[in-house]
Length: 487
Image: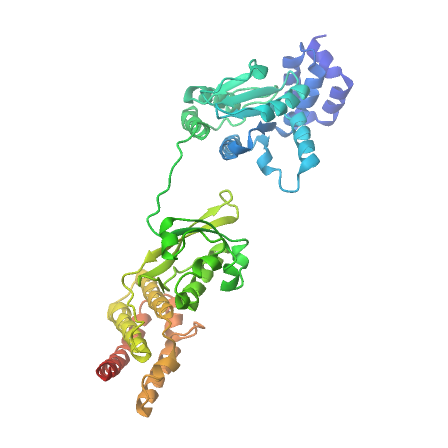
């Protein structure tokens, strides 16, 4: 009787084969490789989970500061192995595993692993903790297990693991490693290739991804040319109002932002930071409300329209907040920080010295002209396409956002500019007619036509508003000339 047959007759192994007949071929194959080893029985029994599930339990060891590199490598190995590498590493332990539980988890997972991968990317590091985990693995390792050290080219392998499989982070060595992992027979004894669908010519590109992750990267220095702050907000999607936003922590601010807000040093909270604008601007409801709205929408992963509202700084310049980026915890994780710039807006007119009625009428005229030439003339006199319908929606939304950002008001504020009874009656009729076509409830004739992308009906509806738009422009222009002459 051969040693392999004797090994398979051991009671624990024979019992396993009796209850796992589907694994018999793989188990016999592994027994052939292990039969002459001193720990053959122990080694084969430890392989049972891998042979049954056709996946290899792996413990990935690294230092905390190398976590980003470890995440890249683990993600790639899982993907390329079609998840047949069941990798455990500390990043995924979770907040509930702390203290003794954390150490117990490490001991448990290392004792079950058939592979132990040790990452040593930085030649300047000490490796005390990694070597401690390596020692734990060696204490449980059998003849069927592998210890693999992936290291930076400048890193000397620590003497305790010099005899184990080492992979230097250059393209040739990592390619050999990947072929062994994915394409070779017996990655652990008894298993076939982990992913034979990978083409051999794909390996060099895979290797380069791992090499680039391991080699110490050049530190990039970001230069930001606008006033910029980095804002940390707990649960941004749950913000209730702009007052809560004031409690957000300003983590960083460049010198341009400090200058804009008249600060020598960064303030801790956003409320403290913005309070150093001129008082009226610091408490302006429009831009603060817009900033709150956009941050909350981003926090809930919703589409948003960019902020249009503005504020004025001490030197008279006008700025608009822009939420330009966020940092997430991982690719799909929660938002950690918002990047906000304050872009100078040279197109907005400073109306602080303008009488209120003149300011409201100037803004009203501006929006009426925009509506005439960006909507009525552009889309009311031609045959539309479905793409035109989308452009129309964009044009109307841009005008609406511009109107709201200027805090012009609504029907009441416009009627106050026209005190004559006949003027008010006519303007009220205009508003009523427009609300029947377009309203916030999206029940108007134009709303429904846009929703249905009715490219024939929309131009006819828009064209019908041209005489009314012309009439209002004439009324408003006459009133504007009167207001100016009175000044």
